[in-house]
Length: 229
Image (cartoon, rainbow, N blue to C red; front, side, top):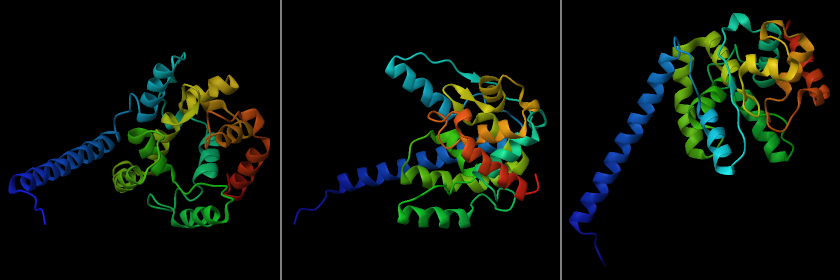
């Protein structure tokens, strides 16, 4: 039998050691960035960068609309609609909604999935650091940062960050840009029905249009009513 030489084994151990160190450094940087975001608004996100690169590679025009505004300047209607649509148990869980994950897994097995299992916190971490790609490695890294976000930021700041960075159309990021782009109105003034329509596009913001989401937006409004909003 051929055996690896001591030099080759040493190189392999060295490579693995440096790889582990690199991963640990990147994770620590992401965790420290989340802590800093308790006070600092993000100038950009992984999704923003991804869309710019895609437009450049495809030689297509791209104009980004992104303005960070305080949560107090976003209508409660829109806050409640997004929570009702994307993470109804947002104020009850600590980053992971195991009930929603279980339901999503069951629907996957039955071939009729209608909802996602990701919480707003998970989606925020994905938007900030990982973009829209899907892989087990990405999910694992995302899951490891979710508790950091919950502990360092708190629910109010998580919601504020999410509503400001989430993609709401081609080059449209955050509540301020979405309200002006889709409804020609300030985020503080948007109504209940318009808010539900905006929330309805979030699972597929590049494919859906708010004015074509009447059925799902009605579902969201019912959820809001059931929650007492």
